[in-house]
Length: 458
Ligand SMILES: Cc1ncc(COP(=O)(O)O)c(C=O)c1O
Image 1: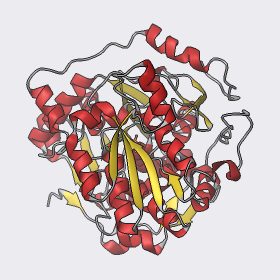
Image 2: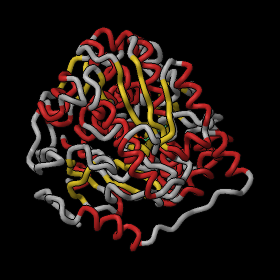
Image 3: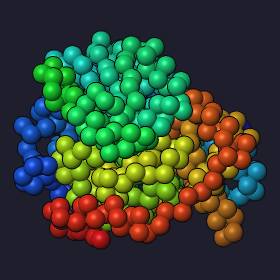
């Protein structure tokens, strides 16, 4: 009998996260202090993160126990189902088998609560009263708002202004979960005011919103900051996705030849692929692809260099693929992929040729999203459409080559709060944006003087 979806019983929920740091072929270079340029220690991070998260950020332990209180909350939607996309396969007339992990079933509608829940939990047990954060299109902000509500914490979210103005429903979700949400850049912070002074109509960026949230967190004793992607502890928490997927693929009787995830800061991609990277290190052949927009081509056109995580230069310098902290991407609808940097773990794995990046233009991603909606039914987040577009490319390649490849991709979130984007697409208002090399070089001028990692690649 054909099996469409594979559920795991609750008893199969992973009890530990997988920490790739124990198995990285090349040791990661340390974050540097934004002022001194020297490697930072746990105390430097203490004003913004609680100590258990700082410990996870630098941990070399391969397996890290998931606290019972976190498992309890995960059970609201985990284990998430794995689907076989039969109708999409049939439509593409491909010999490839396509599987997707449905992370859109969480209360906030994406993979983001996988880390929002533990981050809220560790803050709660460390005495934090309020968490500040940033959000792009609102997925991370809503995930953290929901998680803070469960643990009785206050939450304030700086939302990139273009999304704040165009996508009110995410703000309403955050407010329903009890959080406060303001458009960024705002006049509430020094970094926001500095940006507005130069450009009162600034559409905002994740880098700017991070500056505002960090500034607030540092200024209040019982407040902390939370980041929804990029950092090592976030990648760690997201590995529940891949660990579940491995069990489900085993039940399906298949092993993936290709693993795909869209990649903004890298967290849903890492969550699915890191356990498979371990398999690859141990000899398996897998093509592991992170997909980004051509208008924000961090992995495919950015150097591997030290850069700030934010526009205001408040965060530590991280060794990563970057387009420069002042790069403001075109206002595409995949707000969660509009980030100038990339997770250092994802970046290092690219440098080690274990995974690779691929850039896809906006129109191809929306065409893929619509094809997916008309075959598999689900309407995907604009970010997720990047993974679907790459999956379609790979499935068509398999058809050309006459190969029965197994493709596994991460369906990182639903698009039911992104219908304005589909409206623009359906009414012919969307287009592609060619990003000129000079534009990238101009943004990279701002990081020329920063220290370089040993493996610097320009
Ligand atoms: C549904 C969805 N997918 C993907 C992303 C990209 O983030 P990351 O690369 O951290 O998974 C986002 C970010 O907001 C998102 O909302």
